[in-house]
Length: 232
Ligand SMILES: C[S@@+](CC[C@H](N)C(=O)[O-])C[C@H]1O[C@@H](n2cnc3c(N)ncnc32)[C@H](O)[C@@H]1O
Image (cartoon, rainbow, N blue to C red; front, side):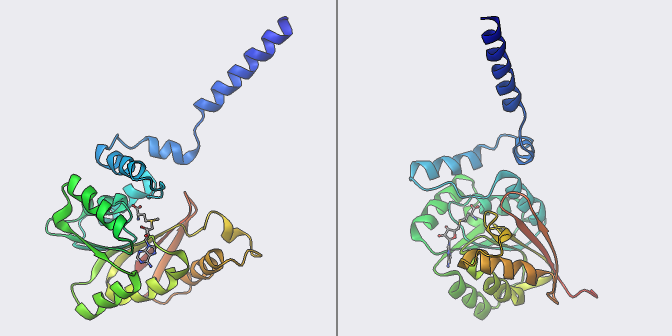
């Protein structure tokens, strides 16, 4: 009997220790103050029966850090507006975000969420295929972008990058999410389109004449790039 009580105590104690011990990313996310606007976005996804695939909180915060003071930002993959809100929050007065989204349903939900966040006036959601929308932006020839966030269909990241580069100011930031493709890039035998394209994309970042790049192996992998020739 004493032995049974001892085992139960040990199991409960161990469980408590496991609960108390967070992983690194949960710890980092836990440092951020409660954010009712972003919590609302996540709730609207549940309410619409859509999967939770917004950026994780500290990546959202990184986007706010990088967009601080920027005039013009571009996002590829709006979804419910979570990352867009994080970017728009950091922009300089008068700054604007252009956000590209293929699905009308997502764009409508994002528009509601930008309104709820009181950011609707500075966000321009463009509905349609991102590549076609980017080509339109090239034709329009507006002011260059200071920050670009790429978070849409993974096999086209390389194409998106090459298309947005002429739209970027020297010194602009480019951020890409999911570059580890849920660790599938780690297995060279996995030749499925997403991991194969992402391995090629990741490698190319470190040989690109116009980019200084870093790959951060946090969350699902974040690529962080600065636009500019190495001699600049
Ligand atoms: C992972 S979600 C983006 C999440 C969002 N960045 C956030 O953190 O709140 C990817 C989005 O990209 C959109 N998308 C996928 N392929 C696209 C394409 N070819 N053109 C435009 N949008 C696309 C999807 O409909 C989806 O809304």
